[in-house]
Length: 123
Image (cartoon, rainbow, N blue to C red; front, side, top):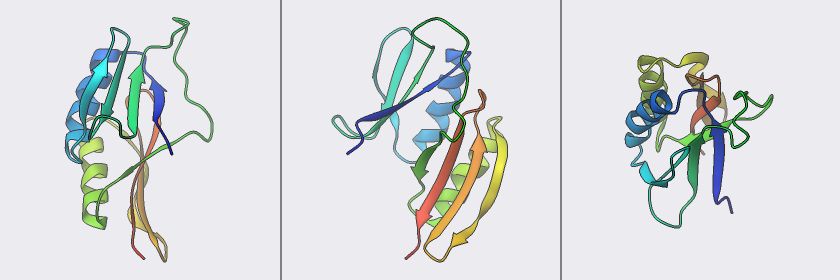
């Protein structure tokens, strides 16, 4: 249902280094891109996350209530993604833990302040 989600960055090189290493943990890699935008996914034709400099060349800003959720494959995988993101310079938005009976999640803000959730549906 989702083709891709795009988040902005102030520094594309720093963002790509962050996402290259982080998304590799779940099989993600750069699939395509241009000078100002790169698309990450696990397979051609699947859902992707795009990281880009804004098209209008204005300042990047984060949407209030906007978040990208990345499945960890297990509670341990979600926690590992959280820990890796923090190691790579992200800031805490909510430590790993069981949020609901069926949802394990953790939250970080990437280097540009974009909110990410690493999760696993446990039921």
